[in-house]
Image (cartoon, rainbow, N blue to C red; front, side, top):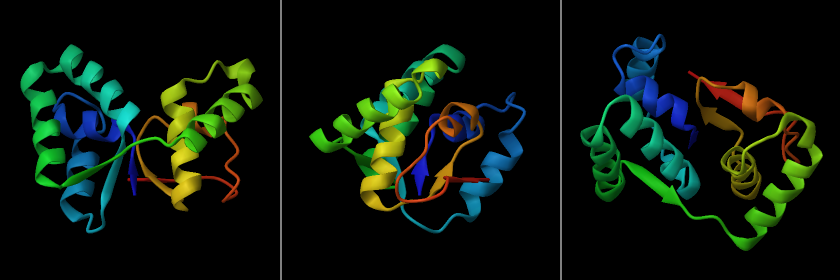
Length: 135
């Protein structure tokens, strides 16, 4: 399962409208959690802005401990992300979102944990009709 930064932010931020759902989901999920390297950078910016350095460090500790596995982009992922961005140019998609979809394609993953679905909905993955979102 790929993690979108919105799922981690919701779980970390008790003021987030999706906090309870995110915490409950993280408590029951029993499969590997994957986070793209570019998504980690995006998550760091969000956590630093909303909650401070301690929240960012908690994510780093989760990666170091193996609770979250970091996935580095390949050159093929970057090429595919560029294609996806060109196809959806009118929506001004971010590289991080396009790379998440490209990584999902490469790994054959259809499920994404995230609450902010709109940015990813502009992409048409090759390996599935669409991505499935949780929680």
